Image 1 (spheres, helix red, strand yellow):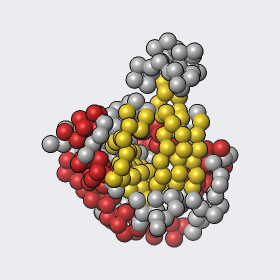
Image 2 (tube, helix red, strand yellow):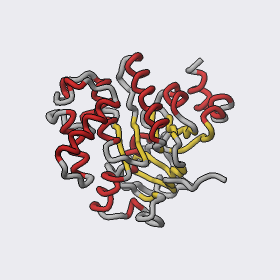
Image 3 (cartoon, rainbow, N blue to C red):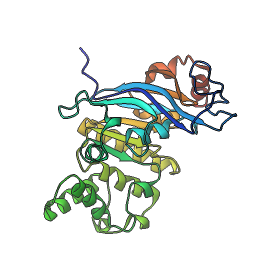
Image 4 (tube, helix red, strand yellow):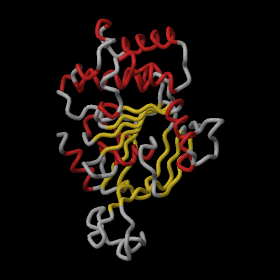
Length: 279
């Protein structure tokens, strides 16, 4: 019997703009892709629903503008949803739609339940703090006040993502893109989150650096059993990491299933194009 989902997302909607008579009603909505020509409203996420299970890596793949990063911003509370529900399976949050919680409660979830690795490390790191200081910042937000303990934890985490000992007190702005992403991963793991979000973490990195980052993510999941949502426009990344895959196009889920199943027998024309691009 399968475990209960650790995260359930139901009918997540995010729009930019107020809408008009041409686009407000879902059944009769007239859009150019996900854009209303009449009023300029963008329907970035349209009724996105899925479950994330304990220890699972869920891949979200789609082209630029498909809504995948907007969805992640909503899940991590960087952006408010227009409507929808999300439930986290913990005793403290059982039955509560986390999108409707207070700002303080959402911060607590970010500090204790979620970890996030952004596409651009500038959004996840303080570039003028040392690498150790970046992790300490997250630990302080989670309630830790023991300086010696925080430094020891920071060093252990940085060592686990292969940051050299002699560079741990260095500022991330001096690091390569791959090293910055590894520091971000260490920071995201510092609060022992049961759920980790990774948004286009290999974009812009050299192929050899991409491979190292992906190997690190796989090792972390294998060692810690964290549930992960991995967003990428690159199906090769999803193929390497994800147990299940969701395909987004114009803010809608057009296909989902076990990753092997999606790759071997894609049903939607767009998914077929993605798969053929790997050949």
